[in-house]
Length: 156
Image 1 (cartoon, rainbow, N blue to C red):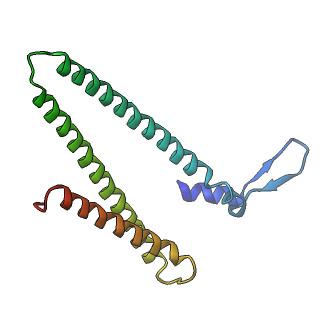
Image 2 (cartoon, one colour):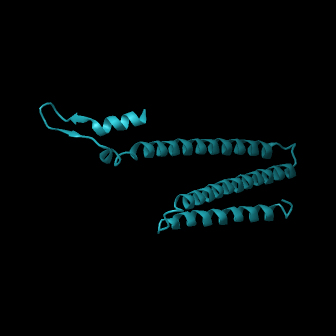
């Protein structure tokens, strides 16, 4: 399908207006606008993803607020259970942060390795981007391991 479309584009002419000269549309002219659709789709995905993440965070914050308000207002509960619940919530939040950091570092590592493999036969100034991704990803991953080791008291 794509091959047929490219073949039609390279051999077809498009009339601007009846009676006016037509011009040929070739691959050379189409490639300047080939980035528009993927870029639009990418930024649309990012906006929807970010909206969904923020919506989830807002909902979780509201539920935490309501639950903590009810726990504090309830005189039958002892305050130690409320404090332990708050510590558990902080521990869960720290664990999510470490997991996010690990995933981001692994994505950077993969991007750096992929860039270096792609540029293996063309070693010029462009290879520095692959090395930067690789080193930053490795440092982030090691940092997340050190932080998780330190917070668990050396048990993990």
